[in-house]
Image (cartoon, rainbow, N blue to C red; front, side, top):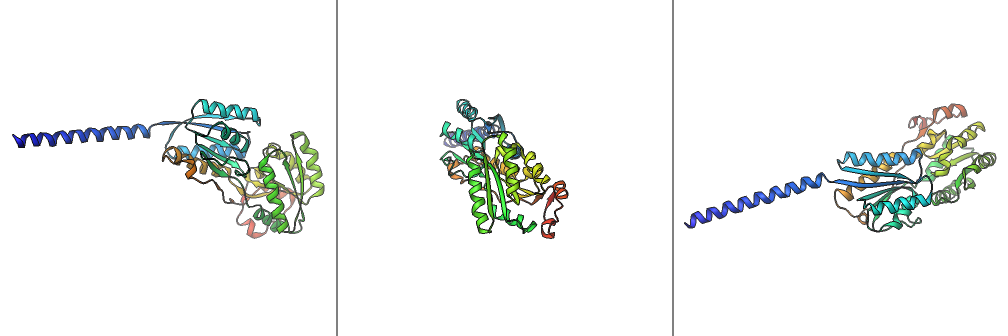
Length: 319
């Protein structure tokens, strides 16, 4: 009788364990199929930021996560960015992906609980967004390295002009970095600031007259009229060189800058760590991207009649 009772006990334990394993597998299966809610907020539409958004979504897809996206564009309006942030909090998103400084500041002020991953911010520290629930990728670049590339193309350049939006914190940081790098290379920086698109044509003309080459920062206002600036530069036979590849696509001669699509993918990988692997944003320090490949606009090259050094020509990607 004791043997029978013992046998029955063993069988009961075995059945119970099997049931528990089955429930655990079922729970894991349910977890793997969970559909996450991600809100994407973008300050304005232009190629670089659009690429950062697409790179993010591609990284999420590659990780196999099922996601319901709520994608919003503030169209350059702070009030709209704040409203988007408030709506994301009310809809209880699992994570917010914020593209550019203004939108990130809006979501930062709206929530201290929902994880936020940012991209396309030059100086997160001075933007006041380094908090426990926020991390991401900065687009700050090595401007000295970019200037050195310019001087390899034309060593006679002495004055570098820059046009930027005076109300955009990212742009101010880049101009300060440009001035520091230029001083080390014994170059003079001619800076012109604008606050609205209507000012850009006249200011660009002034800048071209006073400079030997034009530097284009990652500035949303500048990006919105990039062709206007590069057309004027080409007409005056002046080199316009950009902080990133979208500028070259818009007519600038050359860049060795950040690839915004890859930046978006890196931001997406961070989001996967948070959503899939339960990491906290505070455990993932924000980072910058390495400078990407040299990109040259072949049409602009021909229009300017620039002869590239072999070391640049062999490494460059022509578009």
